[in-house]
Image (tube, rainbow, N blue to C red):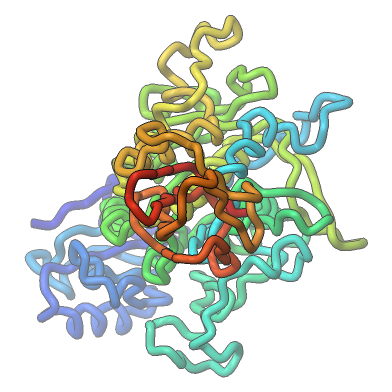
Length: 502
């Protein structure tokens, strides 16, 4: 049955629109393509999700139309072969209002202190194996605080116009431009740095003596350009599907539309089915009106807060919100026509969303084999309750579970996955020195004991290393918290304790 997901008029439209048309079977692909391409008013006809069979997304056509009689399309394809026809939702970014200024005297990166990022980094400093995709308007990819953190597709030869790795995307070396169907993700609009700013919040190069730190620390990022030169998000869902197809662990969408979409919903479900965490800004409308993709099931919807944990005045709110994060006066990477590197303050839910996305990437890297429900429970359950603040009296239960607390989220994972190897169950009369350790450590036992072996476990309880000498080498391991077990030759002594790798 054909479903129209917008008020359809089978008359001529006076302005160009974009449409998704989903057919019922692969048997009608050639017919549909012929009908669309034969119509002189249908432009840019293609199947944006042709490599994705999930929920029939490979049966979706996209086309632009100006002065088009949709009745001709429906008659040509035949109504019984069309599952639905809908307008492509056009979204807008949650931009910083030009009259919202950071309070004078505030430290540039106050938000890291507010969410206890430093304490979270004591547990783990991120993994280069984890990727957060920034689906946005374009990027200053050569920014010195960003360029080394981009996850590149080494199987692709940039700029040769060939899909070298046969993944369906030509020249996706640094990322993907969903509008141009190419790998050019560089910023176009001379005045906009939204994507660059968002990327820095989630995954800027950290501990490199310049600029800023990011909550994701060592996390890599994937640029996905989805907006035109006017900063209108025209290809947001194509960008999400690319990010999921390229294996992104977390996808950040600091944009939204008031229009729901069957195709968009299917794309979201596809990305979730791929194991992605999808984070989206709740909107800067200061009301409870649903915004998409933030409102789709499975997407983490983020509201914005100030330095005092009050709801940011422009932030949307409501029962659909999952969690809140700082979004007022956020210092991050920017672009400048005069000099680089550049940094700037911006405010809005666009800035809150990548803080959550970066924290999820940090958590995922810390426990890569953790179940999704565990990570999300640790994220939501450890959030700082801000409902009881006088400034939030009107928003009780409308700001999600609270404002993110990175330290407690990481501790939650540590506590949960240490149940199988619990240091509290054993005496700590042996020791490992130094602790924290950078490379080599020494095992020290009381004089009456002889070391038989030591075993090293990750936080999930998985044994990852063992040795029989009193000296160990952790150079090959990522930074983070581990558990070391010490056994004596006669088995009469056992010590289990936490070992931190810097």
